[in-house]
Image (cartoon, rainbow, N blue to C red; front, side):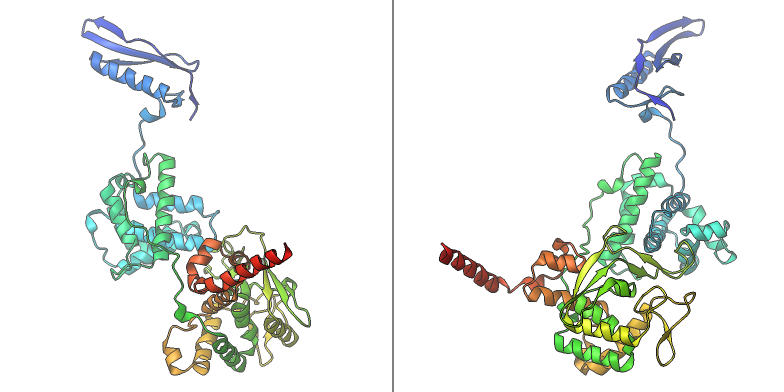
Length: 468
């Protein structure tokens, strides 16, 4: 659409003819011929001319073809939400990571079901959810099959007839209904804060795109006030192991799955995320014979599933969390971890691309050919942790949340660093956190250090007095 800010508006002309008196407004945009608009009453003509003048004074661009300012342009018919949401995921698909595509699709499913007219219940909600998630909101699936598969045809036909228009979100009651839906689980209980905020982010992004296309005048989320769920909360300290418990756990892993002992140790001693350990390569490591080493983390390996990747593979390499794609993060490796990694490299061959932890076969843990080699599955790590807990923990410890996930060992590492008095900015750098999130999540490890801090300050001041 070509526009111009060069607008001239003339006075109203009174036209008298055989059929009566009419009133004409004339204006010109750019160097075009004047645009006329005739009205049967002077009041209507004055109102129209006043709108033109107001738009020009506000600095609105005028359409050269129609002569109208953007605020007076006729709006195209609003699309239904399902059609719009499919177009939204298509436009965003190339820029989204596979995991982001997957989580956005999950959010759009919940939003779409909340946009059904008259709160009707679908004949088979499970099939409808699957149809929306795996076909309607999956660009790759629709590129392969433009029409819904036979098993989804009835479900898609049902929702297509009953879904609301995008413009209905301008009604705050409709928007509030959608916000309520994304805050609940399928059983009606409150959803986790991270789930709610992830779905709200999908809704906000989609609404922003609707505003961009002119389907909505403004973002209705700004007019609906609801309490936002906090997704950064203090850590449940019950999941954090002490050093004795961690050593028992590592010994149990060594006894059952020795090729994964160093994997678990990287999480406990180095506070690495499991996805980062999966991408760890020989060339990323500095492992001296004695003392501390270092890992220079360069990425992670995610498993979103073949439906969400560009090449149909189960997983793909990604950058570090909350970092630019080519960013790196140095992580110090304490002597026990250096020893474990050196032993791992002496015992097990790396994958074809240098990865330390890959799928293996046989008694000696040989790697698979390059075409079949992939990072060790997280399901295998979970199974090893589950079995190790049985061997390493007492019955009471097994019944508790203590180290139920491999990720919980990362919490133990960060807690240990902070409890040892390591400055929070340095811990945040090593762990790949922001300082604010670090101090919120690991507040328990910072509490109680006031006395030690006072003593260090007192000693520093005393040293200054002696020097003077």
